[in-house]
Structures are given as structure tokens and as C-alpha cells.
Length: 274
Image (tube, rainbow, N blue to C red):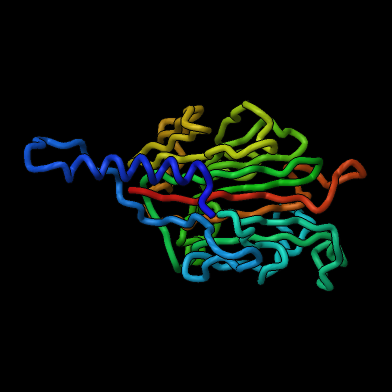
């Protein structure tokens, strides 16, 4: 079943294409829409896994950010809902694995396009409904695909959308690179509606020497090499796309007695155009 937003998007594209078929009397037609270089609308039966030709699921914990979850593969924490969405579910449970702090207390999922898709420019967007609550940390981001050879943060990181669940009306867009990483990353926040109540579009427009963030079409941040105070601009090579739902960590803090589990991060689509 296709969501209303998808139907409207495809209807608009169909209408635009139809104008080109009205006859040879049309002179200088409007430019065609940018071709999709990556698209996943998460259509499929309820309970199905994500498309393995587009995504891979990472497993394990993350000591670097002191997150509390164990990322699993399969469909226990990441599955289609049969209504055109991918649902990433964070659960409070013992996975049977040991995390950096001892027996893991939570499970969740993290997906990336490494080895399947990367881009160094274009429009990257996802339509999502976010979870909420102390200690939950959904993110939609990109990582330089040369991380294996140069390491982080030299590879570069672009956080298109990060949210800490205790602040359900605020999302963050940030870049990390050599000399501006971790707590010293360069970014800005966008305040709007409660992002856990409905779907919203989080997007990045990437051109040479410019990155621009928007929420629901409203631009709230632009970054260029001039913002780096002489540090190196590393956003000039291919990056992979990543989605994950962390639990706890240095940024959001850990869950407490007020945090309800399970929690869901619901993704309607991910589209990349160039």
C-alpha cells in the first residue's frame, strides 16, 4: 500500500511527464525532474526484511558513543509494516550478547548502504516519524566511504537528522571532520512541531563546497568551507547513507523510568537524486 505522500509525489511526476506527450507543438518543455539514483519506498508485506540489494544491517554495540543497545540483523528490530514503511524498533531486552558495559539491556537496528550505494552530491531525503522519550536517539546520516583507509573523522560525517528523544520538537544537522568532530562538530538545530506525532521530511542538498539542511522544505542551515576556521573540508568524495536508532549514549543520556519501550522509528521512504 502506497502512502498518500508517495501517491502525490508520483502523481505530480506523472502529470509532468504527460505534458511532454501532448504533441510536437510543445517547444522548450520544462526541465525533467532529476533522476533518482537511489530510492526505497519500503513497499512489501508486513514482517519482511529490508531490500538486501540496497541495505545491510550492522550488528554489535557501540562503545565510542557509550550507547546501550545491541544492533541485530534479521527482522526482529527492522522490518516492513506492509503499509509502505520500514519500522526500526528499539526494545528493552537482553539480546544474549555482552555490550561494553556488561549484559546488553536493549536491542535495535542500524542500516547502511556501504558497498551498495554512495554519492558525493545531490538531494538526500527521508520522510520519517520519530520516537520520543529520555535516552532515545534516532539518526539519518552519511559517512565517507573511505573510512576504512583514512579513519574517522577524516572520512567525514554528515548528520542529516539527529534527535534526542527528550526534545521531541528539535532536530540537529551537523558535520564532523578533522578538527571539528564529536562535541566540536559544526551544526545547527531546527525547532518545529513534535516530530514524534507525524511524518516529516528531513533533507540535505549537497553541491560542491556547500551543504544545506531542511525540514519539510524549510532550509535552516547552510555550511561551506568558510565555516571551518581553516580546517579541511572533507565533503568532496562519496558517502554512504545510514539510518539507526540508538538507545542511550553521550548525546541523549540513558533511558530512565519515564522511558517507554518498545519505541519505533518509522521511515516512509529514502530518496537520493542528483
